[in-house]
Length: 500
Image 1: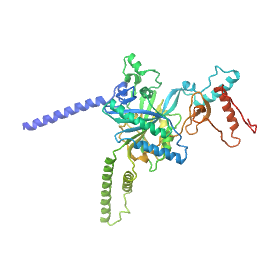
Image 2: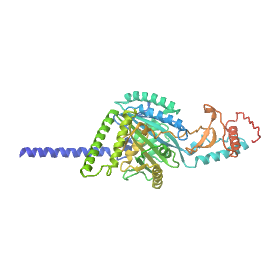
Image 3: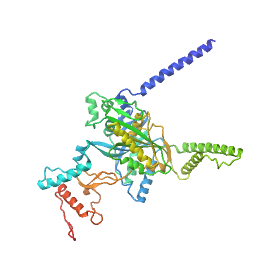
Image 4: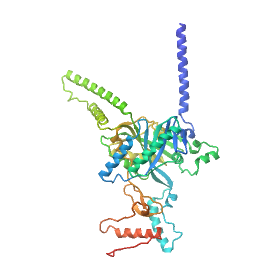
């Protein structure tokens, strides 16, 4: 009797301790202040090497790359870019994580315009008149919003390491490899600084852009932590099911692609990353899997499905009807997909990656947020793709969507190398040379074209169009801009047909 009472007392003590520990863990996990929310995004950083430490053993580095012409290229060029992107993905180990982020970097429109409009201070009356006409055209093209979104494309690499020094050595190898692969793709690449990465966090949680020159010196002078500087002064409401409300001034919603069609094309990704009038972050999370372990799981799954199919065949024969009449189509499709996947791994030398696609919308009102959500889901339905809101995990979704390197969301899909690389993170090359000549609009990205041909590898150019389309008029406009922008240059006009 006493033994039973002792066992009961031990059991009660164990349950009480478990409840206390569980309560403590919940208190730690749930952020109560805005600095605590920012702490969820990173633990530490190395300014010199631009490395962010996410948690105890995960470290990330970010590279910004230049977009290249893909969507309007010929089939041979597209295939070449696709195969090189596949080769780049194959260069990672199965415990690494690759994040491809396309986002709009906010910049004050007035500051942005100064790099492209003409300064009329040193012009005479006639030159000022012509320059003002071009300035009106350029300002109309750039828009009249307070902020303009400059598209940035980034690759974030996350690795597991014991400490910052080990991570630095690993990233040095990956940087050399990344630079080599992107050079083959004819895309320039650079490592993103810690200040730029922290500024992206600041800009997400604030309505105004970060105007602190040195964030680390500012924190030191004001006796603040970096988390305090980055944290918003507004209340962050996390009570809503499918969006984050920051002081009723900013609304954030993170969605994910929950269903793909059988055939995937890069068109959906290109459409989403070039949407106008919306502040959107589109993120591809790609994680290589252990090939041996995945083949083992696949063989086990195939064996289970074959056993299930055999039992259904036996049941059909026992009831005197053919299995072909009552065939389980869903089971057969799963079995065919698993067999095809195994063949691709064993015979075609492909790898397997777990993937998810996240879309983060930032809006100034709930109405704008819902409107953008509706448009994105409408575009997705055109390609038979299903996009859903992340319910009750919006903060974690934002954490996984930003260019930091997190990969904690559980909804993922396993795809082969070729299926993963179908969402090629390239669209079209924008030419935006400051203090250069305005040439019009890029019909793919909808961005203006400002080109200084002196900075190109080959400065030659030609204007091609049908008769009467305005070739001569275009040349006249270019000549006027050359005279304004480069007054020291000589202009020689040869026109045998006297059309100019």
